[in-house]
Image (cartoon, rainbow, N blue to C red; front, side, top):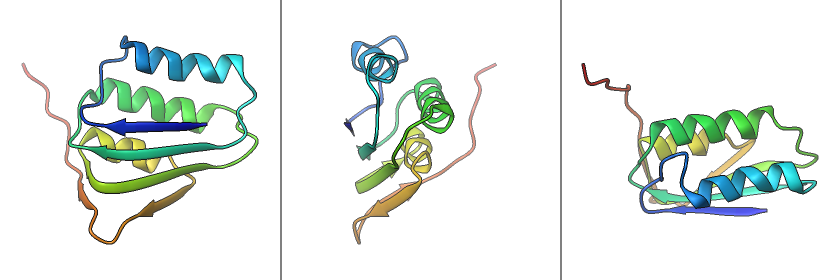
Amino acid sequence: MTAKFFGEIPEPDDELILNFISAFETFDVQNVNLVINTHGGSWDTAIMLYNILQGHKISGVVRSYGISSVFSAGSILFMAGDVRLATHYTDFLIHTTQLGL
């Protein structure tokens, strides 16, 4: 199974995310490839997908591929991989969360 996260990471109720989650419930997932090129997006979605990828019994390996930009919430997805690969000039941005009060 390959999931591509290009552009903004959508909110958890987005159809793309719901389809990704339902694939784990429907199919026997053997390997997962995450291809990531994003400036970030929904923190909630990133944490939710991280937990699913780390908590689900996948018979194979989760591989994360960083290409160009892996920023903010995208870095959480990248860290979900058992194997993490990035191109030479991939930029990463990791920061603390910020809550509006």
